[in-house]
Image 1 (tube, rainbow, N blue to C red):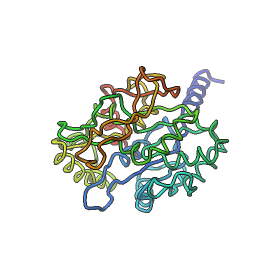
Image 2: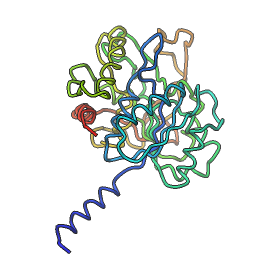
Image 3: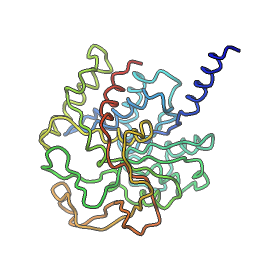
Image 4: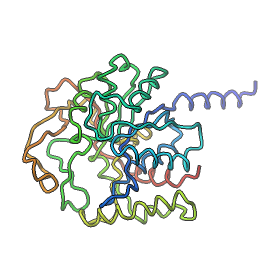
Length: 320
């Protein structure tokens, strides 16, 4: 056999082996009609994930606003998924029913019975914790979970010019479910506000979108109200694509710096986001520090390095 053909076959085989199979669990709200614009980063992250050769999405489950998210996920898949059909399932509708099975948890369990998967967790942990709590037998099939949550002690969630502190939404909306995940032996990597704060997407960054194409025009138009809201509250027009980092540590791990095997624990402290949570003078914080004595250790992304923002924009401009 021609040696060039052999070399190509080996390279092709290696590329297939390097592909990570992912389950996508998301609280996607992009474009949801409401009194106020909803965050767009889950939608941007899904579009990115569909254009990444490094991963294969085997299934998608929703968390909160599941009726709306079911439709918008399928709209995005219609535009951007050019491979095998990806099934979409409705998960926990309000992230307050830990232990209650739903279509999403049942589908994830069946998928894990077939093969090992990495779970991309972009919202509260209700679906995943329900799976772990109800089916501990399936835990060895979970390679790792990448989670958008947590912080280092003293870190304020104050995007933009720092006028307003916000809170660790994915953790605080259902901290009981996060406790279930933390008490499991599953390898965890956290990539949330802290690394994402080094990236920022504005209109000029979206110039590579082709506004003559329906999918790109939809994305461009749908992010404008979210940018305006960010300008109103944080003084900067644009947005931090939080969940892109949660995906990025799987697809582009070398574009981040990490605290490896760092203890993680819950600490009850004075609330630092009282403007948006006026009725919570104290609350639980999910924090990482090498000073903690917790037995549970995780990998924690500290910073998205120069070039990752460009990777986001390059991926969004890829034509399927």
